[in-house]
Image (cartoon, rainbow, N blue to C red; front, side):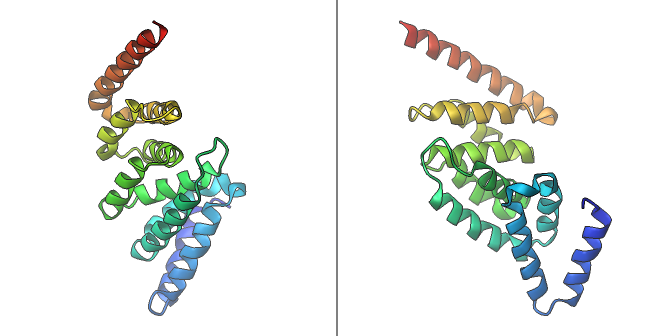
Length: 186
């Protein structure tokens, strides 16, 4: 159950008893499996936090699992978006250590990967990705681009602390969208 003190104590015990981080690696593996288990939605924030606390042990594992999920992400409407989004949110939470990974997901050729990355950035509320979200707000690369634009717009709503910077970006993108719709009508 959600008991941060108990989770922290258990992680600390495992870390203390680990030899060459073996226990932490097993814990990270279990937490990643829990993260991509749709039945544990109410635990996702705690699982992400615990993975972030494991730092280096968890980063490589998360990035490797995300790479495999990205490879398996179809171009179809229905896929396991929550799994990919939760992996990306956790990767975002590592900050500078995984910044390049997130940038690549936000520019990935598959629109579903870009959509999940946009959702993750909004959930993580990391303002370093606002310019990337702004680019996704204006995307018109394919017929499916509207899904990416919608996810980017929803993510902008989560940046309450960055309104001064995010607000003008969102407003300009909405004006561009209105103009694009007017052009398509004629």
